[in-house]
Image (cartoon, rainbow, N blue to C red; front, top):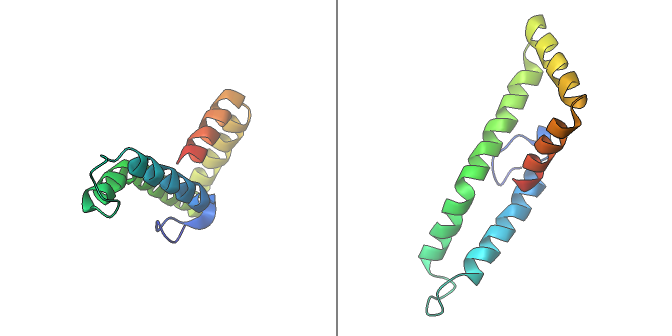
Length: 103
Protein backbone atom coordinates (compact mmCIF):
# COMPACT_ATOMS: atom_id res chain seq x y z
CA UNK A 1 0.00 0.00 0.00
CA UNK A 2 2.75 2.43 0.98
CA UNK A 3 4.85 1.72 -2.10
CA UNK A 4 1.95 2.81 -4.30
CA UNK A 5 0.57 5.45 -1.98
CA UNK A 6 -2.84 3.83 -1.82
CA UNK A 7 -4.94 3.77 1.30
CA UNK A 8 -4.72 0.38 3.03
CA UNK A 9 -8.48 0.16 3.62
CA UNK A 10 -9.02 -2.08 0.62
CA UNK A 11 -5.95 -4.22 1.28
CA UNK A 12 -4.78 -3.98 -2.32
CA UNK A 13 -1.07 -3.40 -1.68
CA UNK A 14 -0.19 -7.07 -1.99
CA UNK A 15 -2.19 -7.46 -5.20
CA UNK A 16 -0.49 -4.38 -6.67
CA UNK A 17 2.92 -5.71 -5.65
CA UNK A 18 2.29 -9.12 -7.18
CA UNK A 19 1.08 -7.51 -10.40
CA UNK A 20 4.23 -5.34 -10.38
CA UNK A 21 6.41 -8.44 -10.15
CA UNK A 22 4.50 -10.14 -12.97
CA UNK A 23 4.77 -7.06 -15.19
CA UNK A 24 8.49 -6.62 -14.53
CA UNK A 25 9.09 -10.31 -15.22
CA UNK A 26 7.20 -10.00 -18.49
CA UNK A 27 9.16 -6.91 -19.57
CA UNK A 28 12.47 -8.59 -18.77
CA UNK A 29 11.49 -11.83 -20.53
CA UNK A 30 10.31 -9.95 -23.63
CA UNK A 31 13.36 -7.70 -23.94
CA UNK A 32 15.44 -7.75 -27.09
CA UNK A 33 18.37 -10.18 -26.80
CA UNK A 34 20.91 -7.40 -27.25
CA UNK A 35 19.34 -5.13 -24.62
CA UNK A 36 20.97 -5.23 -21.19
CA UNK A 37 18.73 -5.88 -18.18
CA UNK A 38 19.64 -2.47 -16.72
CA UNK A 39 18.60 -0.56 -19.85
CA UNK A 40 16.42 2.43 -18.81
CA UNK A 41 14.02 1.63 -21.66
CA UNK A 42 13.00 -1.55 -19.87
CA UNK A 43 12.11 0.39 -16.76
CA UNK A 44 10.04 2.80 -18.85
CA UNK A 45 8.20 -0.14 -20.44
CA UNK A 46 7.46 -1.52 -17.01
CA UNK A 47 6.29 1.88 -15.75
CA UNK A 48 3.99 2.33 -18.74
CA UNK A 49 2.51 -1.13 -18.21
CA UNK A 50 1.78 -0.48 -14.52
CA UNK A 51 0.79 3.20 -14.64
CA UNK A 52 -2.91 2.78 -15.46
CA UNK A 53 -3.69 -0.10 -13.07
CA UNK A 54 -1.83 1.59 -10.22
CA UNK A 55 -3.55 4.93 -10.85
CA UNK A 56 -6.95 3.21 -11.07
CA UNK A 57 -6.45 1.39 -7.77
CA UNK A 58 -5.43 4.67 -6.14
CA UNK A 59 -8.65 6.23 -7.38
CA UNK A 60 -10.73 3.30 -6.16
CA UNK A 61 -9.19 3.25 -2.68
CA UNK A 62 -9.53 7.02 -2.38
CA UNK A 63 -13.15 6.79 -3.51
CA UNK A 64 -13.88 4.06 -0.98
CA UNK A 65 -12.26 6.12 1.76
CA UNK A 66 -14.41 9.10 0.84
CA UNK A 67 -17.53 6.97 0.57
CA UNK A 68 -17.06 5.23 3.92
CA UNK A 69 -16.06 8.37 5.81
CA UNK A 70 -18.76 10.69 4.47
CA UNK A 71 -20.83 12.06 7.34
CA UNK A 72 -24.09 12.69 5.45
CA UNK A 73 -26.84 10.19 6.35
CA UNK A 74 -28.10 10.12 2.75
CA UNK A 75 -24.66 9.13 1.46
CA UNK A 76 -24.34 6.44 4.12
CA UNK A 77 -27.77 5.09 3.19
CA UNK A 78 -26.94 5.00 -0.53
CA UNK A 79 -23.60 3.34 0.23
CA UNK A 80 -25.24 0.67 2.38
CA UNK A 81 -27.93 -0.01 -0.21
CA UNK A 82 -25.27 -0.25 -2.91
CA UNK A 83 -23.23 -2.70 -0.87
CA UNK A 84 -26.36 -4.79 -0.21
CA UNK A 85 -27.16 -4.78 -3.92
CA UNK A 86 -23.66 -5.95 -4.83
CA UNK A 87 -23.92 -8.67 -2.19
CA UNK A 88 -27.18 -9.91 -3.75
CA UNK A 89 -25.78 -9.97 -7.30
CA UNK A 90 -23.14 -12.72 -7.31
CA UNK A 91 -22.01 -12.13 -10.94
CA UNK A 92 -21.33 -8.45 -10.18
CA UNK A 93 -19.63 -9.35 -6.92
CA UNK A 94 -17.36 -11.89 -8.68
CA UNK A 95 -16.53 -9.35 -11.40
CA UNK A 96 -15.56 -6.72 -8.82
CA UNK A 97 -13.47 -9.26 -6.91
CA UNK A 98 -11.69 -10.31 -10.11
CA UNK A 99 -10.88 -6.68 -10.93
CA UNK A 100 -9.43 -6.18 -7.45
CA UNK A 101 -7.26 -9.29 -7.72
CA UNK A 102 -5.93 -8.31 -11.17
CA UNK A 103 -4.73 -4.91 -10.04
